[in-house]
Length: 280
Length: 316
Image 1 (tube, rainbow over the protein chains, first blue to last red):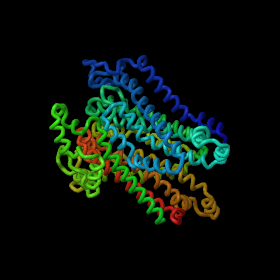
Image 2: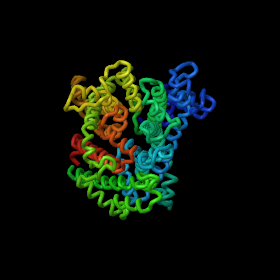
Image 3: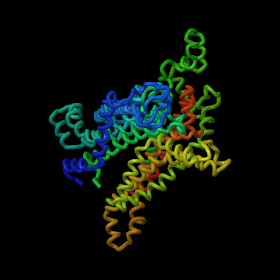
Image 4: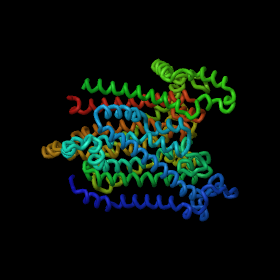
């Protein structure tokens, strides 16, 4: 159970599933960054004679109702979907993390912040995101705010738990006895120890963030057409499901691939970084 | 135990109060005031029209008085009326609730019925090929977006195989067979992530229990492996699974919105989405408040059940 960290890392790195997930993710990110060069067509180029063509050599994933190339839209969609997921989780880590640290300042602050976070936990995640999007209107920026609102409380809890656990340690007492202020102790000594659980939580939350962004866009309250988010492509495809199933099938496959990769990476990181999670 | 229950009830009440502030304030965050949103360009030129509408909706009074009125109404079951249909929000919600409740119950039901045995079996087959297959399957199940899974199922069954009669919803009371036929795919879709989570949790909880001393004692006494598994281990392993089921309720209550959209079911999720697109804010507000309250109540029940099930917690 308490095998050294390096051995756990080596075990994770040797797992073919973990490696495969890292490779798939790297390929996705690479394809997204290089979409201008990799994609065969423009994601928004309308080609009237080519409407609803099934998969073929010139359009491997077929075309949609405007004759746009579905593969190109998915490739450019990587930027939108992973970009929104990344930005929103980054914001959630920042806000939740800072608030979690603040909870370590004293019992009153901790109680107050905890109560406020409870309110956000009182909503099912997707419902909270839909609510935020309903109020602020659709769009990529709103999707980031909506998803960050959902997951900031998760990071608050993770960081707060670490802060409370570490505060009880002798080295913290020693630092304080040496005259270090509470804030200095929090940032210099406690924060580094909270990093491992935050990293694990980040990978897991990224997978949820992709799911929520695509669900919002699918429902029509997230990214709006013609912007190529994976969920938005599915939204445009749903009316023509029987006629052109490829418009719906391929972007969904991309979502599953990305979410699966983050899930597997999250599991691997948990095994490697969290000594409390028994390696089975 | 009773002190715990009291504390938990108080915390839930406090949180609900916070939820009501959030939901109330939410609609006031709409860019441009609601009235301007509703009236559009027409009202912009006429401050008198704008003022009279604001007065009509009570928006000219201080926010805290509006909130107290609204909360008082909500506590009496008055969540206002829909701006579009003029019907009470609560009545609209209750009208749609049976569809969503049936969907949620079916989803939770099948995911428990499948997840617990699969997780247990996976633990018994630990390290083997069958264990690996179940674990990969569970991870895959967690990664499927409900709206895409639903889309694929519709394609497969309705379009290619022609199995499903139609997507036209019929009430359970009028035609139980037809109702269940239309609910099967939505319930399957809604429960997939939950079934995967329960499988994972049952497996790790079972492995945890199987490693305990008292299991070794039972085996040493010569108790059969079957009895050790089902009588000694499973009963204790199921307790943590209850907590996971609680967390999963959040995904079920939220997932209803997505799944009802995919399968065009007339439940509360559909009500919420339609209200969002039509800017019917009292309905948006009311449905989000009620779904939040239902979710919290279910969570409270799960927490209390957990304490009741675990003798170690009960004694405290």
